[in-house]
Length: 225
Image 1 (cartoon, rainbow, N blue to C red):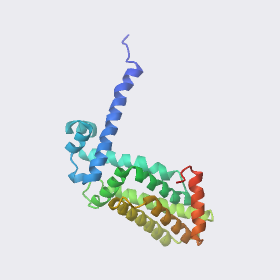
Image 2 (image 1 turned 90 degrees about the horizontal axis):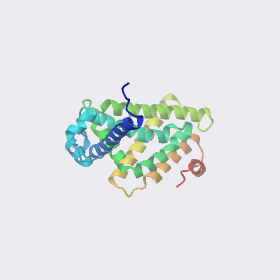
Image 3 (image 1 turned 180 degrees about the horizontal axis):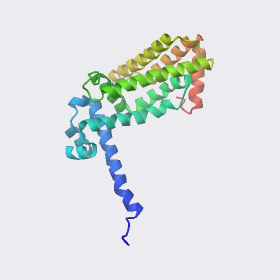
Image 4 (image 1 turned 60 degrees about the vertical axis):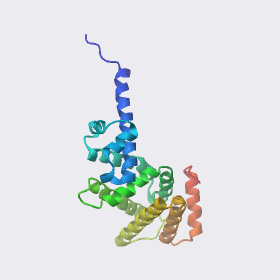
């Protein structure tokens, strides 16, 4: 009978391969975030992890495959912070997302750089970024509808829901860009004010009351500042 390799021996190389893959993706996120997809070279990425461009190709086939892996990594890192919530909880969770970005600046660099570059249809990240924005907008609209159903905000027409979601996304993206240009900006604090002001307007309640509720929400989720 032919001996089978032990599970322990079989898992070792596999774990090493996964670890190496994660290292490459992390390095690519830094390079693409700093220089963009076009200017960010495989050589620069390989140098960061002490390997060769040929090794990167062996793992990801080509530069485009590596970019897709980086974008998937970014989504896997950021989505769990907000997707666990519904209604106004989802909106408030963006405060936690900004706190995460503050601690992981490279991922925000990547997102903003790709958002600008991917405006061109021929860019390999174009469809990913378009779908990402559409998904965020649709999720916000669904959560605003849920907040109204729960009696937390006033009713909004379909056009108003679309407009409010787009305005909130624009506010978040704009503040993130300002923070990238001036790291002294307290990103979490300004986004917190944007979120509280939006909820106060949707619910026609005093800002101070909404702010107190947000304080309680953050404390409840173990994330009070």
